[in-house]
Image 1 (cartoon, rainbow, N blue to C red):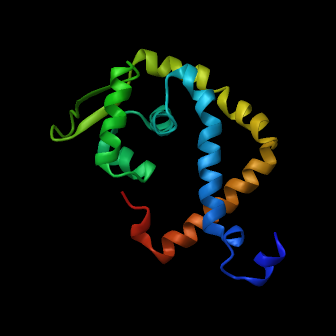
Image 2: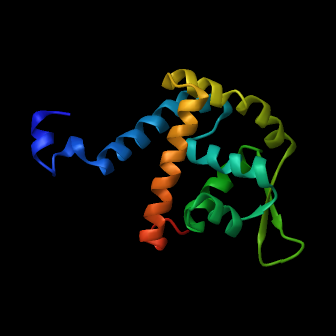
Length: 155
């Protein structure tokens, strides 16, 4: 931290919001070349992670899990469907809702994706314990922010 940042409470480099923004953009950029062979963007990868864990899901449930509004999520799902990774069908329990399901190709993609956490650990130069501690700190920060403003991350 520069001497100016120590004296100025509004110094850009001392702001948590600035550090979080830079960290987010930097991490997503690191994922890009790792995800390209899978033909996935980072937002699509997040959708696939949710589906690998919970499929089938409705757009509403997927929206809640990812904290994305359905209008943002629908084009991601359509692109994944065009890639052959997911299918959309009317939910048998509620015909008004679409169920998002993994295709055979989408389920098979998980095997390749299982290498991603290890690759990212190497790229970041962090071990599993360091990443767990960072994740825990981030989740605490998110919880506090949500408590302060519950609608900030709601879909």
